Image (tube, rainbow, N blue to C red; front, side, top):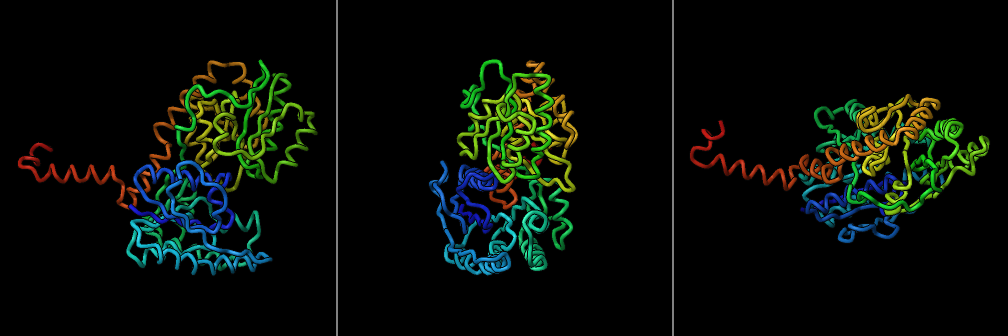
Length: 408
C-alpha cells in the first residue's frame, strides 16, 4: 500500500517540534503501523527523523523564499509545478493524502487525474487565519486555491465539527466532508511514568503545554494562577513550550509577583512531554472566547492520556471531548475566577483528581488514538486492511450454501 503524503506548508518543518509538525508525524506513523509505505513530499525536510519514521522515503523539494510577503505568496503558488512533477516521477500511489496548505493544490489534482483516492486534511480555515494573524496580500488567489483543491479531493477530512461546517460552505463539498478529530499514541504515556521535572514536596503544580500564542488564553491563566496562590500558597506553574507570547507572559507574571512560582521549560521534544506531564497535578487548556473555535487540540488529548485532571474552557471540540465532572472540569472561556475556583477544588480534593484522571485516560483509549485515526483515514480511501478483511469474510460467508438463512 503506497501512500503519498503531501505537505506544502512553508510553516511546517515536518520533522520539527511544533504542534503541526507532531501532527504530521503521528498521522504518518499511524499509517505505517497499518502497513503503508509512505513517500513524504515537503518543502521543509530539515531536522532529524523522529522514531518510527525511518522507513519514510523523503522527497525534499527545493524552495527559496524571496523577500517580501507578496513575492513569497506567488513563489508558493508556483511550487505546485514542482510538487506535481515529483509526484508524477514517484507515482502511481494507492492514496494521495495532503495536509491543506494555503497555496497548494498539486496533490489532489494529481490524484484526481490519475484516478487515485485523494484525501485532503483540513486543520484550519487558512485564508481567514492568515488574514487575521499574519497578513495576506492576494486573498482572492488564496480563495481560488481553496475552492480548487476542495473540489479536487475525493474526500475532505475536518478535524472538528466547526471546520466541517466551514468546508460545507464551498461549492461541490456536500457529502464529501468527514470529521476525524486528532488523537494520541497512548504508548508514549505509560502508567506510573516518573516525573522529569518534579516540584518541591507539598507543592501543587498546575501545567500548560503548547506554543505560546494569543489564542491560548495565557493572560487568563496568569490571573487564575494569581487567585489560586492566595488560596493555596505552595503552588507552581509549569509552562511547557515557547512562542511569541512568552515575553508578555513573563511580564504578566512579574506584575503579579509570580515569577518565582513559574517554571518555563522552553520548546521540548515530543519525547520529553510525557515526563513533564507526569510532573503536573493538574493540566489546563484556558482558551479564550473566540469568534471561531475550530481547533482539535493535541494538548488536551495528551493531558487526558497522561491521566491528569484537566480544567479546560467550555468551547468547541474541547467541550465535546471533556464531560464536566466525569473526565475533567469545564469553565466559561476567559473567566479567571472560575478557572481558579476549579483549580482550588482539585487541590483540596485529591480523590476527585484521581477519579477524573482515570476517566480521562479511558476516554482516549476508547475513542481518540492515532491508530483509530489511521483506520478511519484508510476506510475513507477503501484501503483499511481490517475493513477489507471483514468485507472478504462477509462475501465468502454469503457464497456458502445456506448462508442467507443463517444470517436471518
